[in-house]
Length: 205
Image: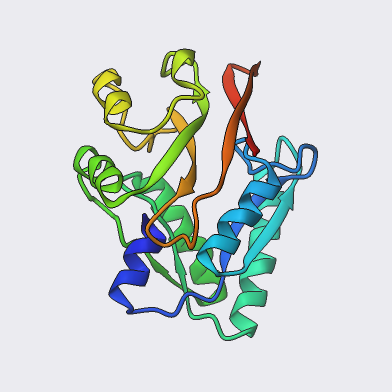
């Protein structure tokens, strides 16, 4: 949704996507999504993705160093801004601002303070389609893992769970969006429990 918003306004030219991958599992950190699915997202959006491989678990100093190196590289290539989809976590925003200030990049938060209940439903109305890939079982029932992110799911969320999962209650994989050339054909795989989290594997058909 963050990328869609930026592309709609045409205020910035987006030259690349950026995410972290677990060195051990070759999956997106926290989300548990396979690398090949990340590659398909980038392909459907038509923007190259830069991957930062980190250990699991990843010490803060290692994360900061690796991220800083990539941001320095981006700046040398002419990048001026870093755009993030954060919604309301002030400490996370402050951390990003401090780290980017060190390398001279300007942070942009297009969705900041958007009401998350309205935002979640607007994404669905716009045609974003996603599936829940990870659930923090301390915050949300494991039964939500592997479910599609739709109005039925939103209606069933407990009141103390953010509709966009901004507090880390759940993570998703977007397999179709208004900015995709084509939907990504997926099938739902098995669900496993690891360190208090439920991970549902998503596979390409």
